[in-house]
Length: 285
Image (cartoon, rainbow, N blue to C red; front, side, top):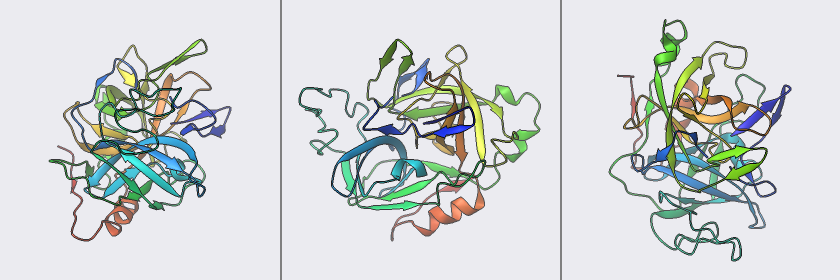
């Protein structure tokens, strides 16, 4: 996830030059969303440049954040809950999954087709979305589902909207402060609450939720591109893509997700669905 500090946007997708950092606060291991994956990105020379989270919308269509694919020519995507959990800093590889260099176990595949939605653009409509067309399909019993266009609009003026629950999922840092950083490299999830849909930073394009461990949970570096689900932990209805936050070094405060319930973005996604596959778009319950 990116952090905005003193009105400067600092990209915090897990870069090779800075430790990748995940779901914070009251998190649990996420076995509910097998379609949420860990994407590892490489440049033209095949060098590792960073990692992000994302969601399969169909067997071959993977949704992530636009800032995650900047400078990337290819990616490898892991769907194990504990992808990279056994990473050995000496060998620089996970002996179980092969993260970040190979696919030793399934489900895992690569992508050489990375499609940007047009990031970067100025706030609030940063167009922070991108698609990966996977080289091999990942066949699962369920995939992420998109909310219909404008689904969140009614929440902007609804009284008591702070009581609306969302669920965030991703593989980034689990805990960080100036003295300590912990990263499990596991798919984790946590509940979050709606803060705002109408501020200058939101403008109808971003969803602002809590990143407060005392309330539920939040996101941090490496969660960029991961889904924000409408509802409880069992929901697979995606309404946002983890994008940026307001902080400098500590993953606390509020999170901003790029809303997926935008007609233009939905059209972009549907226009890139691989032949023979479908993506579901449904209204909020």
